[in-house]
Structures are given as C-alpha cells and as structure tokens.
Length: 83
Image (tube, rainbow, N blue to C red; front, side, top):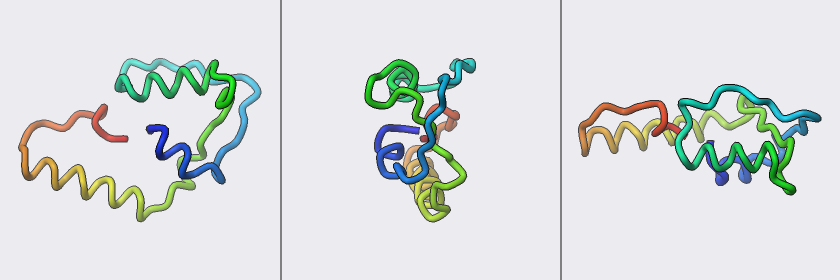
C-alpha cells in the first residue's frame, strides 16, 4: 500500500490504540516509509486501513496495469511491485 491509496480511502480508516509490529521483510522502501509513519508518525500514528473496503474496481485497475506493464517488459514480478 502507498500513501495515495491510504489517503484515497480515508473513510475506511480505523485507529489502533497500539500499532501492529509484524515482520516487514517483504515491503518495498516506499511501503516501509509509510509503515514507519503509521507506527510513529504524529499525523498517521495508529491509522489502519480496512483493506477489504478498497473498491474492487480499484484493485482490478491496478492488476490490469501490472499485467500490461509485464506484457510490455516481460520479467518476473515480485510481491514488492504490487501496491
């Protein structure tokens, strides 16, 4: 997830009293930066996005974009490229 998605779906936010501290070995640099803001950032601390509330059409559009990019530039996609 990136900040654009987090901002777009503010209506799906909840606040956690204690930020989750799960392993982060599969996150991109961009995702790690956002996670840090969610864990200790003054404005976003404790924010949790209920991801099941992200519209299916948005998910579908992102997947179509990834597939189109893969078709133009074949290479193995990894989970860090999916936001």
